[in-house]
Picture: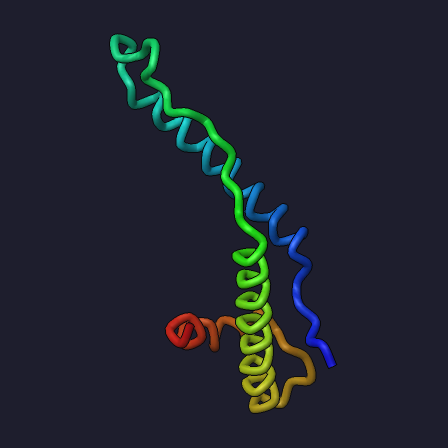
Length: 103
């Protein structure tokens, strides 16, 4: 039985969006930090697209799957201990610090 994981295309789209937003933030900071006298030919960084190879995307998908599965399992234990029938955000808040330390 093959385990269900995230679609590589979805993760790639999310990563590209984050990279684009970070690039815009960097450009904004660089434009605000550079005095007018320094702006000229050759002073801007080359804007090149950031990419991820297929193996990196597969690994990222697998890590996300493992992380989220573990988070849900730990939160379910807390919810069960409290007598709840559903996992609430508070259950995730309880397990998150230790989960992050474990990963």
